[in-house]
Length: 206
Image (cartoon, one colour):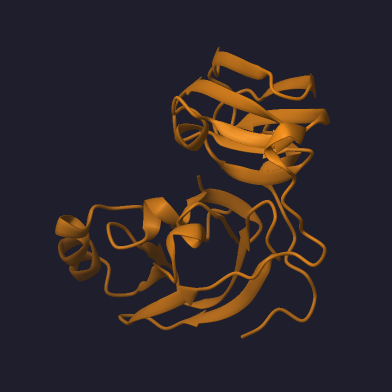
């Protein structure tokens, strides 16, 4: 999950975080705190590279980074992107609280104008993109209820660093249930889906 050799990213269990931090005094830690359940489903991009969801970092894990300026970007379909620039000092620990707002013009269709989409993917932590927008991890779609979407045609991309991406196009009709089942094949870190990389908008909040 590392984009540059100069960036060290570790997602560690909270019980082991103290020992990792003590062993790497020249790095700094950033803890991600979700403002609500919504934000836990958001994807996280660090310095332009997708590193997982807030759910994976909130409370149980943290980012261990080399000192200096880093860029965070949070994305979730139906919500405005949140971009921020943080400064990491050696031997320090800081918290970053993420709160998202509904995208301008976002609407919720009537149930009779929606279809149900279920996705069963291995690994379950794979990122799901719908029409290029991050929609959550695979386990968000794997429940019996899945996710409801407005009727229409969608491009679905399932991707994860180190794996080959899965792509499909679906036309959803009212009241129907659709299911995708796939297991991602191992791939190369330097040949990944374009959705896994992102450039933070100019003027990102510090």
